[in-house]
Length: 78
Image 1 (cartoon, helix red, strand yellow):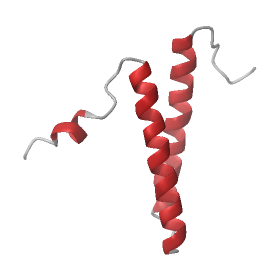
Image 2 (cartoon, rainbow, N blue to C red; image 1 turned 90 degrees about the vertical axis):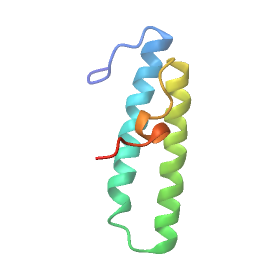
Image 3 (cartoon, helix red, strand yellow; image 1 turned 180 degrees about the vertical axis):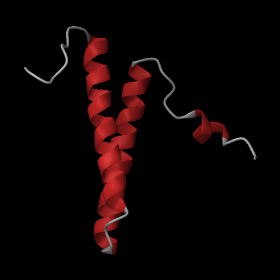
């Protein structure tokens, strides 16, 4: 299919799905700041959290860190 990467291995599929999840996380995070209805903000934040969980699982399957280093240890003091 035009516009989609060639997926021939499990690793290719996982990287493709990771890209999709990353796009979704970015879109939900961008949308969250524009939503002012409290109940809708909670719903979007919940979806965002689940998408981030999906990314963590996929990263684990790719044998990559499942959380950014800054999340695990905090940023260096400035």
